[in-house]
Length: 231
Image 1 (cartoon, rainbow, N blue to C red):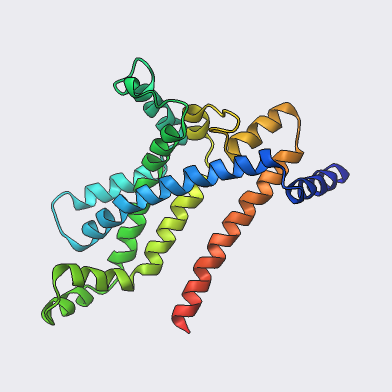
Image 2 (cartoon, one colour):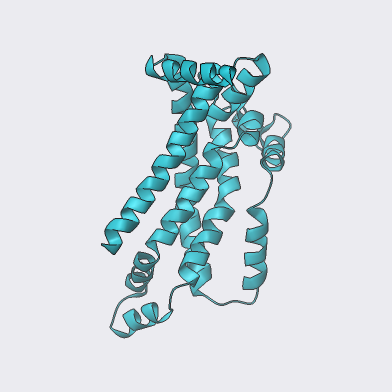
C-alpha cells in the first residue's frame, strides 16, 4: 500500500512540475486521438444517419457487420494496416509506417464502425414522423435531415465521445503502427507500457491519472450539455 501511495504522490508531483517529456506524450496522444475521431465522425455520422433513414435489402446484414466490427481487436487492425504500409505493402512507397499518420489511419478504421453504429442507433430510435412532418411543411431533404439530427444530437455526441474514449486508451495500433518513438509517436498508453516494462511506475501512474481526467472531463461535458438542454 505504501508503494502505491508513494507512486501516486510522485506522479502528482511530476504533473505539477510541468515536465516537458510528460506533456509532449500527452500532446501526441491528444493530437492523434482527436484527429482520428474527427475524421471518423466526418464520414461515420452521415453514413449512420443514412442507414437509419433508408430501407434497403442488405440493411440488417450491414448492421450486423458493423456491430461485429465494433469488437474488432486493435492488433488485428494494426496487423492489416502494417501489411499495407510496410515497404513490401501496396502503400509502402508513401513511407507512412511508424508515423502519426499511420496511427490515425489505424484508429479511424477502429472507431468508424462505432460512430456509424451508434449514430444509426441514436437516429433510429427517433419517431420517423419528425422527418415526414418537416418534409410535409415544405422543408428540403437537407433541412429535414437537420431536424432529425438536432433531435438525435445527444446520441450522436455520445457516439463521438465513445469513439474518442476507444482510441485515447488503445495501445495495439499505436504500438504496431507508431513504433513508440519518443517525441514523435509515443502516446500515453505506449509510454505506460514501456515504463511498466522498465519497472518505472511514476510516469505510468501520472499518465494514468491524465487518462482518467480526460475521460471524466468529456463525460462531464456531455452531461452538462444534456442538463442545459433539459433545463
